[in-house]
Length: 480
Ligand SMILES: [Zn+2]
Image (tube, rainbow, N blue to C red):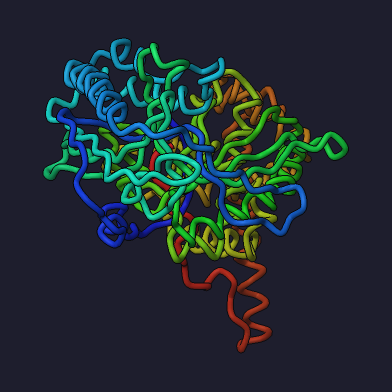
């Protein structure tokens, strides 16, 4: 199973189109081989944040002149890239991962490593025979502080040193089941411990906002990464970093847990970029992603930018729910999305009114989804019409459980499911009632709300029946 995702719809301008607007200076060295995407690595600083504890991360200091050395390093990186490409063709996860930075140590990146393990797990099952990537370095300009490939990306902060190489990677491949190839152009980094060691892939070069842990409040820290030079993402990253203390506190309280460690978030402007960062073969629509040990990934569009905190809180809700039991990712999909929605209701406008109206409308029209149909992830094709039910029906049921059985009952139900119990067993264990009975009580409560709204509308015909509020998609997620 995979991550549950977040919200939103609408793809964006692709990174490729961003690249077109970036200045492309001279050619530079072009390396053969194909390649992949996805992130990690140290990034340059960006955008001051008005929250006092959020600080800028300064650009990397540069190295000395290295024209000739750079050519040699590129050749070395090419060999690494070719080996990784061959591993993708062969579906050999181990051969691929030996070229990726480790989880720990001086070069380590725990989060990126875990994401790469997930990505490799997918192509190990579904090899990608046409995957190809090209590494390219632009003209190198010697600056006072080091060497800057000025055409790499619309930011001047890239610096190559004997232990860090920043390149442009052009990638192309056809995901399983797709009719057209996918193309991405991304700034990536290779690192090594010393000049004699092998280069390791460190993922994309990001800019980032950091918010430090605060022992006085219990906040465990945040790191928000985004594509270098993207002003929209920079603004959102600043906001997210500033608000994550509140998000973490309120969502942790919702589940009765305390998630440890720095929470990492990665922001994307292109759906293809986000999809490709998850699995090479991922083709379903998605607006975000979260898996245990991975960063929260969010697709930022003009629409999501207005409700970004609700999306972040939803995704962090998944992170917190993974604390409830070792089999959390195996819980019914409607429960995982429902609790993430409920945990984020304080960050969404009119969350309760909207879910009540929507579910009432479904009841009236006989369109509530059978629970079994919204349990598996992904949904069966014949149940695709229930995608929104996964979120809103799941949220509504869990809100009912919380109101009727209290926060302890609500959490006990979730914990039982996250420990691997079936919904029937979890209901008995957490709520002391058969699931069939809980479902009947829930439906009766919706009917009561519908009847009450109808009676109210009769008294005040000029008032809008809540159950008649036009539906407006909540969060359209893909993938879990
Ligand atoms: Zn979700």
